[in-house]
Image (cartoon, rainbow, N blue to C red; front, side, top):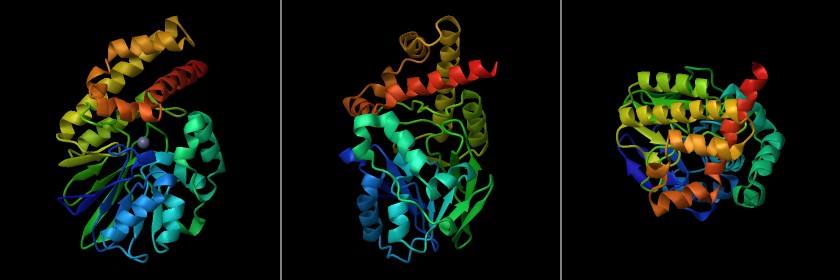
Length: 304
Ligand SMILES: [Zn+2]
């Protein structure tokens, strides 16, 4: 755990025992809010961190999810039970998956295969505990502070960022990219919903917020929010365009897609330390990026 200015407590959820990979962020306020919570297998780690931070079972007001991928929301059902007063805030497209996680969990396990036990599932959350956040929805933290939901689709259609408005702190989730283990910001663009045009439009919106500080889920505070947003945009644009071109001359050829994407935006700086590479490889996130791009270009071809 790491206390940052603005009463932000960064919790390492220790995804499958790997540190520095997936974070949750607690905003300490009159109405405390936890943003994202890691996989179901991280639920005890996060619960213990909240207890250590002094939160009793009745003290957590909000559990806010940037999106309903299991590395962000898997612990939500377990934590909703452990903190019975907390309301769970989510993009409207994600709400039904919290109430009935069966399809989400089955789809995730199909993608991750033998790694699925390290991820776990998601315990269903009673509908009356779920708040669907419209774009611009404000989550009251008390004391005049609030968190604003900023829809930011692209990584997934049910993705939103959260802006702490008093101090201009942006919790970007996975909209900008991933920066772990000393590596450079690099897009996380997985199947089944990754959409380049939506992703770039979201980055325009996030840049327009001109955040003073920014946190990404994988992992933590970034040094220069404006620079990171710009880097994320240029990388996504280059990789997405390269995928479209590769598909036009070699449709369905995943090796050609990979070569084109790596040439357009070499991953070296993102993966350049052993720590970064270990984290990227731990759950096949690099392969998932290619599958996300392939899914996108195939979807676009069907729509033509
Ligand atoms: Zn993620």
